[in-house]
Length: 428
Image (tube, rainbow, N blue to C red; front, side, top):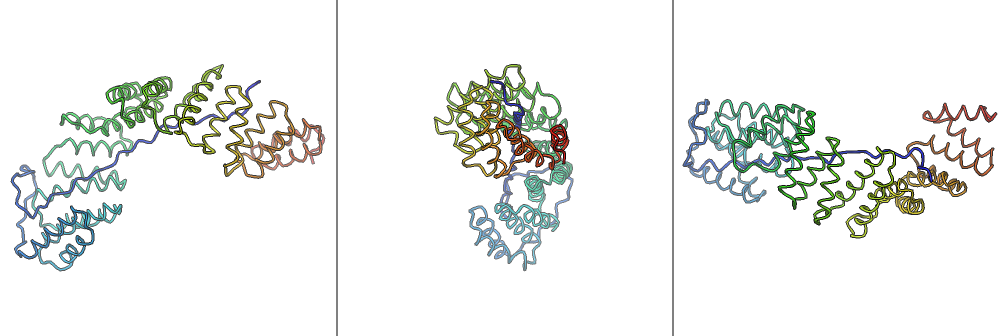
């Protein structure tokens, strides 16, 4: 059997890398500190104005409630201080506590506004001020305000005169999100140089920055090394595969995933589906795609048999494509049939009809293609042209003409359809 013409190219989309900001809460600064955290700060520390012992106790209770996750108590305790305390210090710390609550609720903009209000208050000791300023940068990162976050970190470092691994990691994250890849690489490397326990997510940013800046070999090498060092970490595998795919090193990605499959760490639906797709993408670039397509069917069938891959329309569609490329018509049609049964559109039926046409099974092809049109397809003109081809195979010229006239109304097929109609003497 010849390959079905128009086989859709599978998208080689890399897995999404996520780098979540995890801001550390500022400590209860109403209590005395044993260590000065910002001894070289350029900011002149203001004189504190909290003298009311009752308010100091109330502030401590409110901040303790935030730490304990008691939102109701925290709000009931801290909001009155914001509204009515004569102490700017108490107001500022209460605002910080309320900002933390909003952050925990996912209201990043609300959290940022309260934290900015707290910082603008003026009466905060240096250690507290710079802790909150650093927290603001992390809140802005979480809210995808990357330039604002970067500006805040720059100001924090310039005025606080402090360098930490985590601050450079935040800077690198901001740079990456802003598309400033060389700067991101430099910042992450600086972060890693400042600690003997670098966070695993920093490598993700570094690998992605290498890949985005055209240093695919460097990214691929890092990805493989990271996975080899953490062979039982599914995230390390996902990140490595994503970077290798982005660097267009599909054979290396396949090799890595097959290694995981062999040692039993290929466990998720995403893993199995991505490996199947990788085989199909690789096969499509070869003169003979059949060997890679067969491997794709084996991977997908294994995932299904283990209960890892669910029988969704998308997965059945992928399996159908794999069997079609492997020249296994019966199994391809079976998979397309299962996909069509649960699909909300007619794409699977169209693929089945197109495949049946290559087998000269015109009646069955007509049925599948008509079903696809009834359910809705992305390329309606193509569907009508295939329907016309089915009618021609059935020797029904009037029906073929009628279908081709429908194809002539679609922009994507109008030119070809009109040419066909003219040649058939049915131009009008």
